[in-house]
Image (cartoon, rainbow, N blue to C red):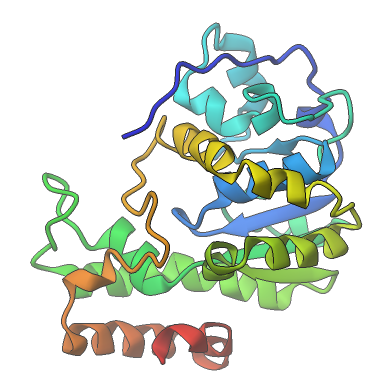
Length: 260
């Protein structure tokens, strides 16, 4: 597992207190760290990580060293020299879920989606003692756990402002084309995409090193990551598909690519 001794520059805090311009919404393990890294690289502006208890200011005030909690909150540009001006307002804020207050904002929304067979299975269906052993009650755990995944789809579908869905698999398969569509949505330049791609291995290693400070990337380096779903039979995957269809209803149209 790749980890780096990280140094965090939090001299500037505009990235914390700036107004919300764009919200990034995603289920855990959907590559939001890598996505934020790419957006910061292209825009030269910071992104905010999510905090569950609105404690960003407290974390900044009390963290003398770069703890995993601080690393999750701060911009990628505070850790790696990727051309981010922390004196500028943040371009994007990560959220775990949307509240009624979010729907009152004049902001854009990006939903980052990854195969439910991968992310919900990883988060909910393994034993605590062995994160690669399927729990004997995995069906019940999946049925309960997929609610959070579906909730993000419902948040996105209900959003009345500008919105864009970005699929994890498209990031893996064609990063340049995906970032071009994201850049158009955010109204930022695509000029640095070739620069990012020229040294893509270094940048991916940076992103994985960040993520591995608070979690573990099982699919690091896999070009077609179908890792967690591979532990299940066709019959078990059909159960997962049916449960997900039942909870999403018409919104399963966002997920049809995964059930084929």
